[in-house]
Length: 130
Image: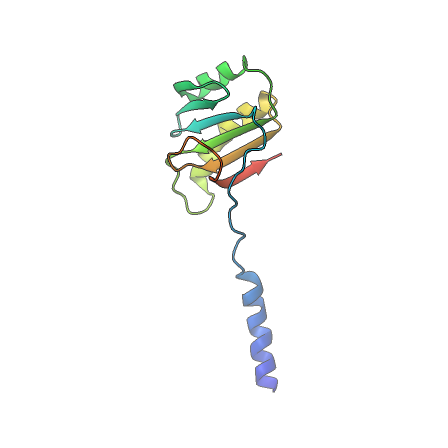
């Protein structure tokens, strides 16, 4: 009885600390006026909505976004993003977007994992900032 109790009490911390992280959720767009940007790589992107803009440099696009009507939500789809968990690549690709979009007044910024689709609905949510 003592051995079983010791074994269970030793195993308990392992079970508690090895819980799987919560599954990533599929994104559902609830703001039809959201700015939706497809980040193609670390330097270039294109706007999918509200008005399509072809491939552009990230910084140049943020400059153009100053002229857009103010919206609450910005969605950035990270194409060609392959990290299994958020790490250095995520930080490097999203930091400029986060600062730039916050500076433009966007209150909700969502980063999604791209799969080549231009519709953000159903894509995996990597991070969301309100």
